[in-house]
Length: 424
Ligand SMILES: *Cc1c(COP(=O)(O)O)cnc(C)c1O
Image (tube, rainbow, N blue to C red; front, side, top):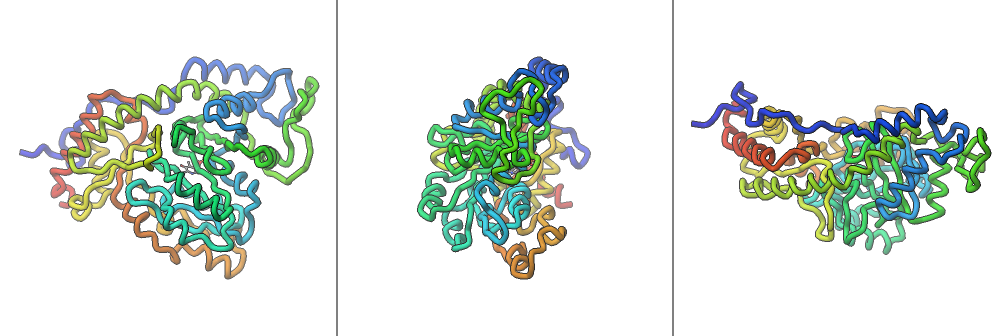
């Protein structure tokens, strides 16, 4: 007899609580308290005799990633925006964007009045497909953005080769890939810059936050100005109570500064990152083998990947399941079994309900622009197939123990066996 599915009123496979996310530590609390008493809550406040938390975090994250420069930002979206601006991307320029990602990958491009050219992905990784990239490049392409999606690293060997050959800057969106490495090197160091998000759900978080890393001193200087209204931190330590930011006005910016509170949280959270990543890797490897045995396909990563970072645990359902029930319905049934939110992968960007260029007047730059950004002009079969057949589980699941992974696999098996109950 098959057990009744939890979504149909049966008993759930998992009866315990999952680890929480984010995780507060003593150091996190202590750092916040230090900021509270410091009389400096922003880098745009007066100097109080100590280097800012923002600078301390920038140094720590540079050291962690091995990048020469790091400029923190208020969000990942702000980091992407600054990076596009620092690469002098502007009105009517084309920017390659992979067909499956969080909406910000495309909306940030519209935000600088450029045209996101939605480009198909590799079926196994969900990351930008190098062959599709070659076809999408035109004389107007001013930047290529690549997203390391879920738990995958994109094919950086081929992507960097194409970018180099065409002399187009490659921007790595690493919002989901803190700690991921390719050929032994941290992601974000293969393109001209790597952008990170430290939003609540990400692998390193301060609730909201971001950072850009680069090895290019000129780009780093432009980024610093772009994030602080055209100001930058002086190379000399300022006098007590003076502004630490000086008005060089080399380039007009916006206010995308990371607050001292956020920076202080990130300094403490970074201390735990490697240990958390290692635990997730162990559990993901275990789950990979359990689910593969059930006929499912865990997300692949590019061959050169030397360390994965699991932002989401992504697994593709076989056609024998997806032809009978939607991945969405399967995810809902699975969520009820393991008592954890499970989702399908993001919709392909040309069909993503959050991607609506015409809903804001800001993006109306004339008919040729409107035609160029029209999502309906794209065909993204691999992106669509990926988004319609993959389930994404949140990374806090991977902070549990090995027994919990067995239960997750049992839940997949239970739901797969009772597909007919889901169709009813
Ligand atoms: C989260 C995310 C962003 C945006 O970061 P925010 O900090 O939310 O602005 C951009 N790209 C990708 C791939 C993301 O996952």
